[in-house]
Length: 249
Image (cartoon, rainbow, N blue to C red; front, side, top):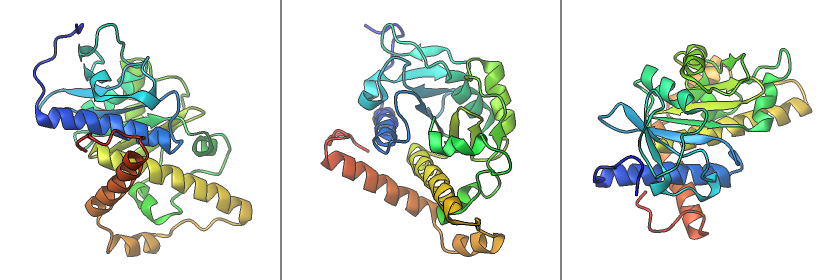
């Protein structure tokens, strides 16, 4: 019996649940997320979103585990006894403030976060798909867990209009227009950080110039690329049992 009665779920609701669960499993599979972190998705037509409970392992997340929370972090629907994650306000406040965002990922990738731990070496755009962040990658100065709405609103202030940010000595926040896109961007964000780290070992860095970015943008089709990457990771995982083969995603 649920602690919050759930209405009958539509096919689109069930599919969105499967996508959030699959995205989480895939990010774990890629060693971007581990025992901590979460993916959320806005529920169309509602001031509410899906997010996993605090006590369910990311490696075993299933669609029925997901909670429905409002932007204040209150649980509206979910399995009996489950609690929202400590940083539910991070997701709720971003989704409240940014109507262009339909999915948020928060994780704690150590190598990527290392760029917040040194002076004068900010994370830059060095790979072509990282042009998603050409407007900038802000760093939130407060490393604390985003454990209440006030701290969530502070994160929103740092994020501004950008599509990703780092929280100093803490982790990453990725925002996107869909669950598929947030997987795409999470992978590319970490790939860009890894490339910059390894390039810095070899010699002087050469971030992409404005001309480089403009050249790549002339032929890049984001929707097609997001779908291509989603299909690759989903089908690879399903063929190896990492994501259930019968999920409609």
